[in-house]
Length: 614
DNA sequence: CCCTTTAAGCTTTTT
DNA sequence: GCTTAAAGGG
Image 1 (cartoon, protein in one colour):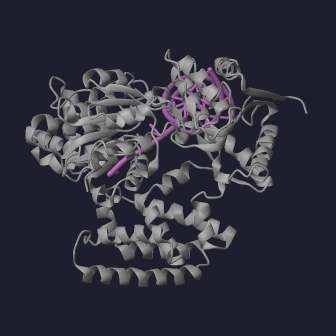
Image 2: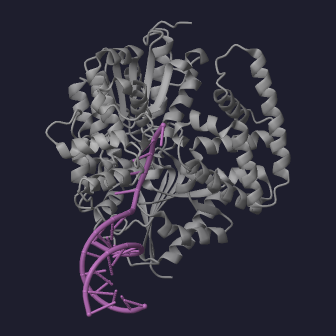
Image 3: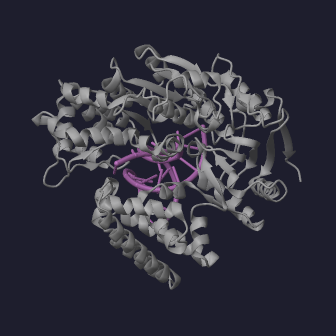
């Protein structure tokens, strides 16, 4: 059913602020500046609803949403499916940058000229880029800390085909084809370059891409790299497809990892994008917004006047700095305060977060100990965040949940979709095969339930997990999830999961509780600011607000101030900074980052407490 | 083997 | 900028 443009209203009776509505209705290229808590995801979901339901995105054209992280792509897809009728869901494609580039390459690699036509069984370079470094070594270039960025830049800054640079050309050709001892290996930037090459040399592919996607959403646009921006330009510049880019220049904390500094300006200029500025802040209490305003003024000339959610009263929000001599006292007070928040203020455990600038492990031990003393569990969330986003981990967890609780419909739907995808019958009309597989899956869940109840060791849990993967068929899993297609990565994930889950079962004596603990339902996450990006918590403790944590401050003051901004803007109501002169491994000062302290003081809402004595 | 000097990592994601 | 690991010298 189509809705006329004038009749469309934001779904679910939600009201969008004026600028957000204008951005939704804008059918040309646009850049939406959305500060923390402005409702980026909701805006994009509403725009998807508008475009699809009013047929401004003309059937059968699609919307392509590109994010950086898998969970962001997944969350956006989820939100959109809440906002649009299910028959339109198939026309909203939510992908990561890398999967978009790789899917272009994998589909069209045969249209590359012979010289650059890579081995289709190429591997993805590991994070250390060892295969590439080894290839440089074959050509007598030895990569070290000092020349690494020079050579990698030389490898990745030239458009294909390579002209006049024989070294780089030979390295490309070697990595594309491999030899008897070395598999063809590509990094994601290389994949992006190849995708650009394909699109530039095959006008028909480019035209069909533009025909397929009439509207493009770009999430966290401030993190876009030069190369990713180049891909977007190749795909959609001067086409009739329109782009909605959403981001926040004050949250630009990935410059050190290669984000393009001037991407907002380039986009506005080259795509003639209109700029929209969202003013609502749905997250933080008014007093905390005062801090955000001040920090904004140090980052840019444009004033930032976020309007708090009307649910707050104007003096809501608590911000404090605590000073200690000794890290033990710091840990004790943090633990005591967290315990009070949970007991007296009824803040739920997983609505509290401890963030550090850089290295979680250095701070975590003492805090975890002291929290344990007041019966609160905390953990370094990094490894769990990485594990829990894995498809194979989700598959096993949902299988266990469905086996234990037959009424858990989310878990059931998830494994049901996986199963029919593995069997290749999604979208089939054959009721018989659906029924057969449904029965098979239900019977197997009973088996899992029985086995689960007899497990007495981590080895037995391992056997069960192997059995589960065999039930779905490891080959089908590897085929459906290409990230597991080669190597032992999938086994490592499974083993990690076994260890944690068994440990939690040992502690709780209950599988469902063990799974909840594993998922972090009852523990306080400790994480870096970078990992906390995009998340929000009722209470945030920023531990280690000192010069050592901000060691790069003099070199990248702007970016570190952005990091500070991202960290403090995670908090909804309570925000605490702690400084300790002595730490387990060193002593600390806070003079180099005095400007950050000054910002907090300037906001006039931050209370300072001195615990140097006693 | 021990002491000194040099180098790397630190904040990240992606199939 | 500082901490830790690896490499080098006697």
